[in-house]
Image (cartoon, rainbow, N blue to C red; front, side, top):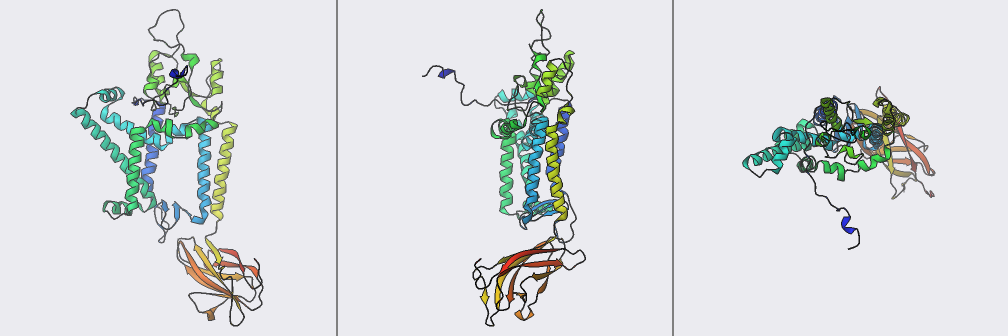
Length: 479
C-alpha cells in the first residue's frame, strides 16, 4: 500500500436519512404560500376553460399532439411557428439567470418541482409519524404492528399524491373531463396509462425516497449556477464573525463567546441535512428555513436576529467591518440583474410583436421534381405542385389561390376538370385546418423556365393574404 493511501476519503458514503424539523417563520410561511400556488397551478390548470368558438377546443392550456397545436388562452401555436415555443424556453432560461444572479438558488428552494413535492411528502411524514424526534424514534424502532401500520399508511398517501401528479400531467395533452372519464372507464389510450404509471413511480421515488440526493447528486443545476453567482448575489450565509467561537449561554469564564450556542437547530430544519455554518456548499438550496430556526433561538436567548441571513459576499465583508446590515432590495436592483431583466423583456416584447402581426392564413407549395415538367400533345408545358393552404382561424374561411407570374399560365386541381382551368381558384378551408391541394400549372409552348408565386387571399371582411415563391420548369432549365 502506498504511503497515505489509507487516509484517503472513501469514494462512497452511505446515505444518512434526513428528518427535517418543523419550523415557523417568515420564510416557512413564504414556502407554504408558494407551494400552494404552484400545486394549484399544476393540478388546476387543465380544468380551466377558454371559449375559442365552436371549431376549437375550449381547454385554456392544451398541447394537442393529435392535431399538432399548442393552445394557451387566446394564443394558438402551429408546428411551423415553433419559434414561439423556442422563445418561451429562452425566456425561461434567462429567468433562471435573473433569479440566480439576484437571490442564488431561490428557484431550488421554492419553485423546483423536486423541492415542492419533497416538501409536500415531508409534511405527510409529520402528519403520520410526528415531528423530527418522533420520526427518528420510529426509524430506529423494531418492526411492530404500529410501525408497519404507519409505514403502510404513509406510503399509501405517497402513492395517492404520486398518482394524482402523474394523472394531472396527461390532462395537459387532451380534454381533461373527457380523458378522466375515459381513463376510469378503461377506454383511454395505452400511452395514457403508461405515462401515469411512469410518472407515479418517479414522483414516489424522487420525492418520497431519494429526496435530498436528487438535489445533491443528480441535479446539474447546483454546478451550473455557480457560474452565475458573484460577490453581489444574495445567498444564505452564516455570519461566523458574529457567531464564533460557539458556546452555551450557561458557559462562564473570561473568554469571549459568540452568538451561536451550537444548538444545531439550523441543521435540524434543513431539508438536505447540511450545516450552513460550514460555509457555501452544493447541498444548500437557499430555502432559508435555517434563518427562521436561528432567529427563533436568538429571540429566546435575547440576542440580535439574523445570525444566519440572506446576504451578499460584499455585504458580509462590509458588515464584518462594522457597516450596517445590507438591505436585500439594494442587492437585487443592480446592473447585472437589470441587464438580464432587460434582455428578458426584449425577447418577450419581440414574441408579442410577432404574435400580434402574424398572418392567419398561409400558403406553401412543393413542386414535383420527377419529372420536373411534362410536354402535352398541343406543345403546352405542365408542372405539378402540392399546395398547402392553412386557415389559422377558429372558423371556416373562403380563400382565393392565384398565380403571380408565368404569363398566359392557368391552373386546375385534381377535384376539377382541366376545362375549368383559370388564373385563380377558390376553395373553403375548414376552421383551424391545413388543406392540401394537388395543382397543375399549364403554360403555352415556348414559355421559358422562371420563378413565380402562388398567392392566397381571404375573401371575407377580415381579409389577409400570403404568397409562396416557387419555380416553373421548362426544357433547357439547368436549375
